[in-house]
Length: 25
View: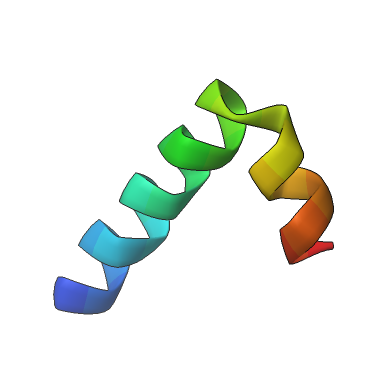
């Protein structure tokens, strides 16, 4: 569950911040 929460949070952050998404990729 902890990992799921982190992934969900990260996904939301990426959607909110396009720059972060590029950095992750």
